[in-house]
Structure formats: structure tokens, C-alpha cells
Image (cartoon, one colour):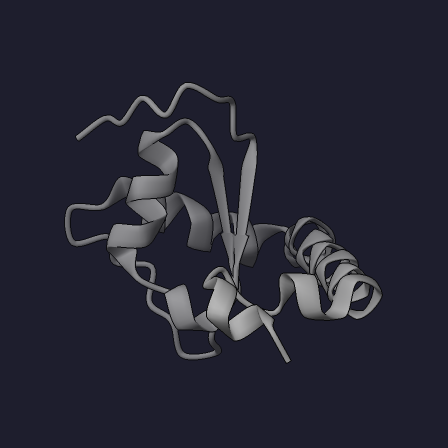
Length: 101
């Protein structure tokens, strides 16, 4: 299944909570490279999701390069955290009622 979202997503960084073969494949289907935090006991068997095997092999063959790419996620999280601290109540929630103190 190929999705057209209308923007170019080069790489996508996700934590271990999103470590699924289907997620890796969906990311690859939109034309991005998945960088999902890999657990120690992960298997490279793809079970029909070739993006999974490719991602795990990249991790195993060049762990330092994979870690460098995945580290960008912590930079992004830091930016979001700074924005939330700076704008406090206006970013608390999408629902207006929850934005008011």
C-alpha cells in the first residue's frame, strides 16, 4: 500500500513503543527511512515487511550511523520541550477549555 501525503519525509524517528514491522513498512511506503529504537532481542525476519529487514540490517551493520540518525529525535524532543516551557498555557492542549488555568 502506497500513501501520497504530499510532502517529502526523508527520515522518521520513533521510540521503542512503535517498534512494529507494519510501522517500518508504512514509513518506507511513504518514501521515508524508518529509524525506530531497536530492542536487544529483535529478530530480522521480515514476515512480509521488507522495510523491517532493511532497517534491522542497517542497525546491525552500522550501529554508530544508525544511532547518529536516531539521535536527531532527542534534538526534536528538546525543541518541543523548550516550546512548551516558553509558551506554557497556550500549548497545554488542543481543546480550548483545557488551555485555561
